[in-house]
Length: 424
Image (tube, rainbow, N blue to C red; front, side, top):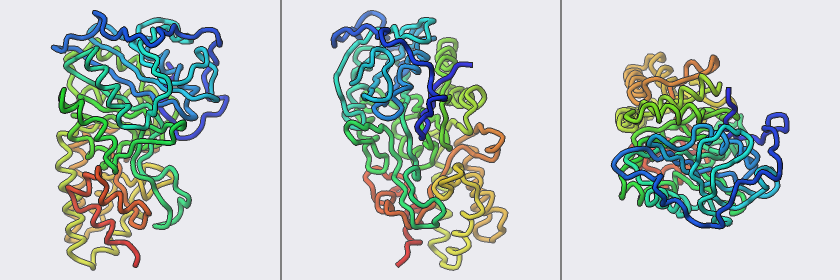
């Protein structure tokens, strides 16, 4: 079984890191020359772009060349263009010539899993991978040089849904939970926020020009949340992500790319499902799921209806708040920020309140519509595929309810319900 990096939210120990590559095996650098417009590119009338936004400008640097090598096992070809923008930082790895800065690659297949042999199409120097314009530039470059009908975008990084930086995991309402983010660039000290609209800003021009991505995938922790999915609806047809923190296996790139080559007519959901299935069944991750973003509306309506019912009757506020104590979280440490949506529906249903119980049933069923087949390990057989945030007193409540990118609060009353629990 191949070791692939799924971006763990903890720093790897030396025993977990892959064997070091020889320092003198650096990939050839073209000196910044853009060779992306050669005749290997797509014609825009078919085929796939498989784009990896590989943010290794942090403590994951040691795994950058490891996954570049894994992407090379299958590489580009048969109508699939594997294009990577990778960033590194000094201090965590000397592999592949100990380069730092930002490079663009078209991955070319080879059997050497220790040496990155794909040519560097562009050496861009140090870029801020946490800046929306940097991601937008990568997407524009890929579409100009390798146009294709279908597109997959992978975010490779530390991920954070709502609670990784929490200071008091046992507190009900006192600890702070950061808004969903991706693209953690230590050199610049930045990341892209979903709540503040930075991810949407990065994707907007590309989607306007070329249509929605077939799949947006996260090789990162805790990104399979309703909030992230809701914010991606205008930008993608399907999402592949984990509810839980992720270890060092994650997406099985060789299998995904082989599947794409063998099934060029696959649908967005079939591909997202294959990505998620491999992460759990081969990569042995705790959870992973494929969300049909075109079917998310039922879940939006179900959460909105629940919020509306509780907001309309103060007598329901206390019992509804108590349901979160019984609901299983998709993360053992930050439970209240990663409540499993389906389990929340089951808890509400089982409580038997004449007003809320039917709404709990609807909630549970709506998750099945959006996530037909979630994958979970033995400890997560209950996981429905998406989490929802339930942390009223967070210092980020304003961003959750009023952020420029907080579409979940713009389109439903769930954020209003969270705010209604604030202590005076």
